[in-house]
Amino acid sequence: MDHPLIDLINARIAAAEQDGAFDNLKGAGQPLPPCDDPANAVMTRILKDNGAVPEAVALRRELSRLRETLIETADRDERRRLITEIALLETRIELSRSRG
Image (cartoon, rainbow, N blue to C red; front, side, top):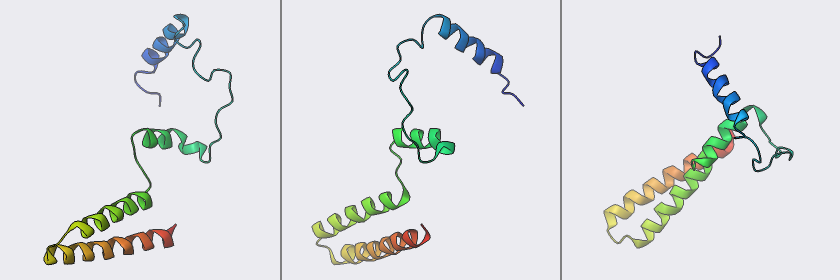
């Protein structure tokens, strides 16, 4: 089933081509960059352009932030909470490594 606006989309693309909107684009005539996962290339690019990172990277960043906070914290109760949170995060990182 085609998209309900496919005719409008095609008309806009054709008009842009006639107006030269696609002339002299950066990288025109060059081979596409290598891609490890062509089926998900668009999704990967969108995620990358919007700052998304793999779960393991996000977890390591959070772990680093917690460790820095722990160093700066003098309150015993807060330190205890941070140590617990760090331990849980380290466990999550290990679990994600064993799955991947």
